Image: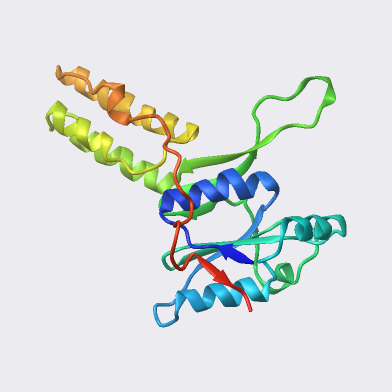
Length: 223
């Protein structure tokens, strides 16, 4: 079996974790960085083999039925993430794991968590949960301060280009964060008598990306 684990980009990793892993119950995690002195591919193979990650969907279903946890592993450059579902697994005793429902996964300025939906279902139904991808608080404040500093001192074309270069994938919470920055910037520009930055500068549609490179070292055979 070939297990894909090397993400093609930061956006690819975030998409794979939020859209595929968290929604299937992979909520417990450990993240870290591979030292430059170590070969990343060798570390990939070691971790996947150690925790028995490279198994079929049928085997995952059988483990779940027995109350055993399943795991996933993903890496971008030297940053890696190990995730596990509910159930028994040596991983949970050997590592200091965190729950992304309480402690978001932080990666490249993103904050990835699994949250309960805001509305309470009628009729006593169980609340719905969903993955939430935001710009983390520190990065968001830095980004907002950067644009406020430039709001009344840059031409419209320059600010428009700055907004277009913001790298974060446009998940709904990120769209709201960026629109909030835009509103604040335009408030400053209106007070100064300058032309406002149009919302079209934000490119609010999220682009679906290829999580893993189509070829190369993202596929490997576990011995």
